[in-house]
Image (cartoon, rainbow, N blue to C red; front, side, top):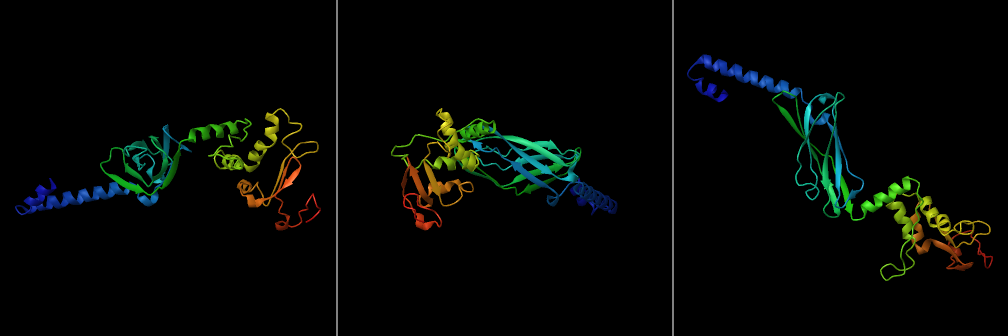
Length: 277
C-alpha cells in the first residue's frame, strides 16, 4: 500500500500528504514497538548441561534467560547444540515470568563419544498481540565430554552420596594392566567418582580390612595391626596422585622389610634399620 501511495504522489499533492502521514505513523509504531522490547545488553542467559553427558542416553538441557524488562513477553529459545547431539536447533517457546525469568528445556542424545561445544543461544522476543519482534544471538559458550562409562560413573557417585562403602580395586597382573599401577585407582576415585583424597585412601586401607572380615588387624596403622607402609614426599590429601610417582615414594615397607629407601633426599627422616638420617 505504501508503495502505491508513493507512486500516486505525482498525480495529487493530497495523496503525497497521505503517503507522508502513513509512513511517519508506520515509523512511529515501529520505534514504539521496538522500545518495548529489550536489547542484547539487557539480556543474560545460561545453559545447564547434564553432568556428565551419557553415551546413548536421552538427556535434558536447561536454558535460563533473565531480563527484568522482559516480564510478560513471549520468547523462543534456540540453542546451538552440536549436530551429533541434536539434529537442528528447533526453538522452544515460553513466557517470561513477572520477575523477567524464563527457563526452557530440550532433549539431546549422545550417539558417540567425544568433546562437544555449544557456541551460542538464539533468542526471539515479542509482545503478545504485537506485530514486531527482536532477534538476539547470545554468545553463551559451553563444552561437554561424552565417554562410554559415564553412566557407571554417575551410579558410583550416587552410591557414595548414599553412604555406601566403596573400595578401589581391580584385576592387575596382565600385560595390559600390570602390577605396580594399582595406585591409580585412588586418582580415578578422586577425579571421576567425586571422592575426597581421604575417602579414597580410607577405602583402600581401613575398608579393605573390614571387607575381609579382619577389621581388628588389617587396614590401619595401629598397635597390633598388620600393615604395609608407604612414606611419601608430599601431602596425598592435597594431591593423591603423588603416590603414582615412584620418585615421591621415600619409604616402602612390606611385611616388615624396608625397600627402596632414599633418606638422603628428605631431611630429618630416620632410617629404622641403621639409625641414619
